[in-house]
Amino acid sequence: MAHMSKQELKHDEMADFGEKVNDWYDRHSTLITVLVVLVAVLFIGSKGYNYWKSSRDARATSDLRTVFQDLQAAVNEQDQKKRPEVFSKAVTEAERVAKEHESDVVGRAAQMALGNAHYYQAAAMATKSADFEKELKSARDAFEKYISMAQTPLERAAGKLALGNVLENQLLVTKDTAKIGTEARKAYTEAAEAAPGSYIAAEARMANARLAANQAGQQEAARSMFEQVASDRRLPEVDAKNKAKAFKDSRGNEVSADEAERLRRFEDLSIAAEAEKSMRILRSLPGIPQQ
Image 1 (spheres, rainbow, N blue to C red):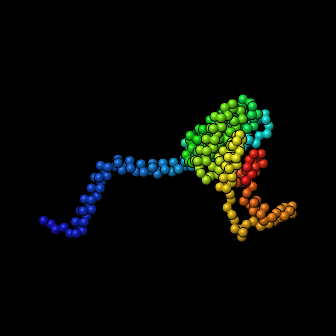
Image 2 (image 1 turned 90 degrees about the vertical axis):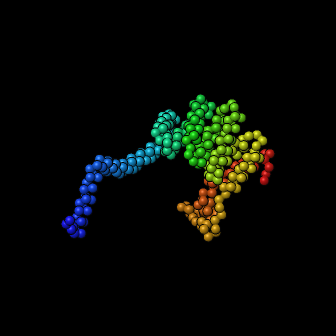
Image 3 (image 1 turned 60 degrees about the vertical axis):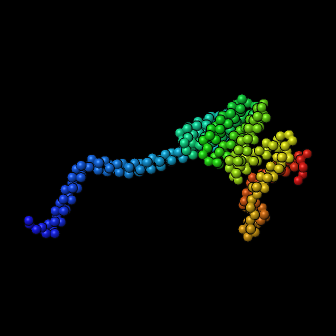
């Protein structure tokens, strides 16, 4: 038998390997083509999806901006003859965006805006009119739907607070004040419980205190509720070295350091300041213990 060199053996091994590769490719060429195409489709698809998502997000943001702009225009409209048409436009656009984006945060925000559109339209009407009650009913329906859509504790709290506001206004026209009053207190309580410690919770507790203040024999309980909110929402103390300095305003008037600090921290606009103001009003009423 002829003797083969290492180079010849290597060559035969490479030839055998090449034949095996060709044979395997012949048998699997269709699969390879499919895999290559699939990889290409997935790559292009991921790019396409990202582009589609970016486009969709941009469109959703634009839609929501339009909803807020329409609502703001309606709230600011001073011409009573034009106001119904402007509010109608705001309602229609909010309904459209809420429906088209109902599965995401844009849809939920539009749903809240829809409730606000009806609520503010009612606020611009005479309280004894049938339209006032109709718009409040529409606002209530919109906020209840928003609550059912809520995905976070803060969203649920915001919905409950808005619902409580509507119910509180319905007390102005309803004959069943006991039922509506109970529902309003329940909505405010649930708002406070949904997001404890939040600004929304503080607003809800203030609203509950306000309801109590308007009930016979509940003024002292209301005062206590306001006092608790004022205590819980009191602004933190600031080190002397970090406090604002006295200055002169544009007219040359002196502004003290204490007043400058109040302005910097918006103290007069805080929940605590509002609660303290409500407590002072209640203290001025006869029959309320002066503490």
